[in-house]
Image (cartoon, rainbow, N blue to C red):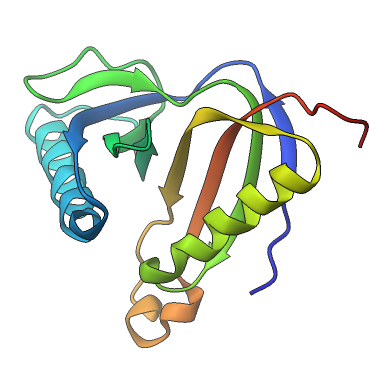
Length: 158
């Protein structure tokens, strides 16, 4: 798949309602949906409004992560579900269309782009998952996931 990589500066991270988890690579397909479900259930039970798309923020190479949902406003927290925010700063992003097991292709495209253009990776990366639509059950090639990486400034001219 061809990926269009965008570079932009973000000044404020979007508020999130999340749970913290640690998972092995082979556990992500279970851990992420379970954690998203827990966050949604907590928000519904507490009648919290303003929840958006699902998010998974990968904090490090050990796969410590924050999983939850975007919020319209800062979240006060409720039990295990706590407030966080998306990272702010220089960000590379792309859109992946297709099944989740192929998301690694989008991550590789961003990492390759960053290396070719002199950017360093600054730590966290994250995925924002589109709201599920029935059409995706029949055609997984239409599943949308936005992929982001926080960057260090380029070391050479663009």
